[in-house]
Amino acid sequence: MSTQPAQPAPSQPPRSLQAAESEYDKALDCLPCRIIGATAFIGLGTYTFISGRQQLHEEQLKKAVGRSFALRRLGIHGIAAGLVGLGLYRLVN
Image 1: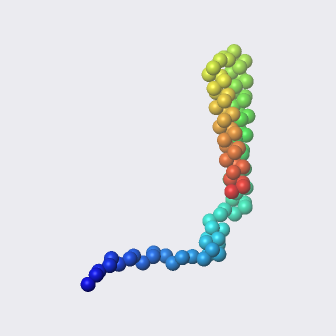
Image 2: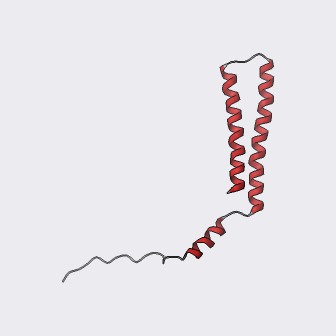
Image 3: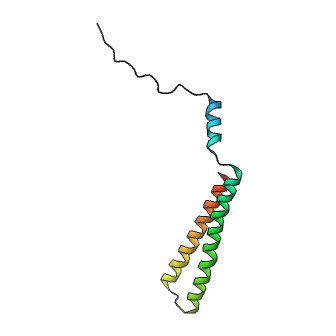
């Protein structure tokens, strides 16, 4: 009288590779959606860069050059580059 613990039944049967690939393809965005998303991110990055450079130029004319100026310039360029990078990533993936 040996009692073995009952093994749980698998919750889902194994799927074929084709079924998994078709499910993955359905999860991807369509091309127009990716283009619109990429354009939005790249546009935001470009706007951040241009408006930030204008503000930095105005601040430089006031002779407010120093460590805070360099950090602010680095922050503006970093955010702009990050947004453009996200736009390119969105376009590719």
